[in-house]
Amino acid sequence: MLSVVLDLVLPQTCAGCGAKGARCCDRCLAELTAGPARRLPRPRLPGTPDCWSASPYEGAVRKAIVAYKERGAVALAGVLAEALAFTALTAIGRTGALWAARGFAVVPVPSGRASVSARGHDPVGRLAGLAVRRLRACGLPAQPWAALSQARRVADQASLSSAERAANLAGSLQVTQAGKRPPAASVLLVDDIVTTGATLVEAARALRSAGVSVPMAVTVAATRRRS
Image (tube, rainbow, N blue to C red; front, side, top):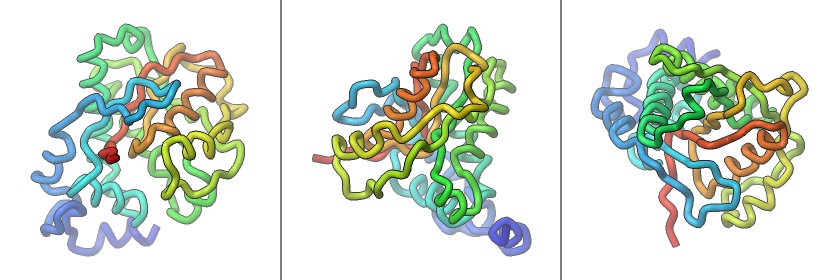
């Protein structure tokens, strides 16, 4: 709440480059939305949905996501959701996704309760809700569905390999009681960042167990995998 108030009363600077003015200047916004593309993790874990992201996780994009997610810069939610929706539109258009025309649910990857409490907000849930509005404004039959919750705690993943992350996350997500009636047969899964893809695989597994298809995932950014 304090971060929101400060954003309103203090002179703003761009979260990406530090320039005075908007929280995301035109140059950084262009960087954020310039390159929607299929960015699949390497190696691709079994069960990974087709994965698209707005940009690589670097430079101004990385700074903006960190500011939004970890430093309470919720004023950035609009531009990040815009990038998420633009990426979804691009992906659906380029792949000729028939499932999207029949209607689909947009499901955010959930944050843990401790993370939400520490941050003071649910960053991916907020982005998913705003992205749905933009997709619907563009004529796509998208519906919000906060279907997932954590079934158990997981260890910190910062130092884990792709295989270790997959093992760490296995069985960690579940479809909530409130979410057991899917609003659509297909799901567009959304998250802020994709690294190894292990989180998306676990989210897709939980959703598929509830009888829905998960053909695609969209994120704001994707990390560059290095040997």
